[in-house]
Length: 194
Image (cartoon, rainbow, N blue to C red; front, side):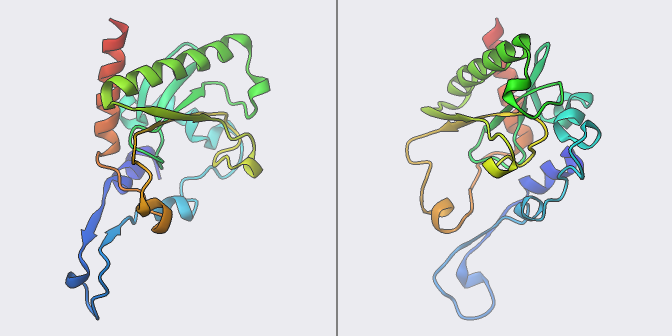
């Protein structure tokens, strides 16, 4: 599955009221999130840890729209997360296929830091983010979904964004399609440069 297919899948959502479903109504509404099965089943996850199957190595070879890239630097780039914790969840990745923060050279470290700072500014302007979670999961045991290629998470946060839905229902409602979020953030990225 390529990024375009995954984006289309992740953007397809439907909601059903309990009264619309067969059987005895139970008082629960349902937000169907079939796109999450791609993540749960590991579809599109690299077959191995080589750069040839790494989505973070493949994305820069696509157009910004198809690769969901918000901005490109000299040694790193900013891309939308296909399985965001919140709307606007970005990843800052070096172009070079390295797994550990200590493997970055000084120029890569500086650019990952600069792009992370700029991503925060862009998200504040474009979506009114009130706070952020920043982080790198180093290694599969630490929670890295793609452990072979270092990536810095930039997750925008708003007061009240953590409600019962992700806590009880293990589902996150995202109000905007990934492609639309990418376009809005990319446009703001350019405005911030002016």
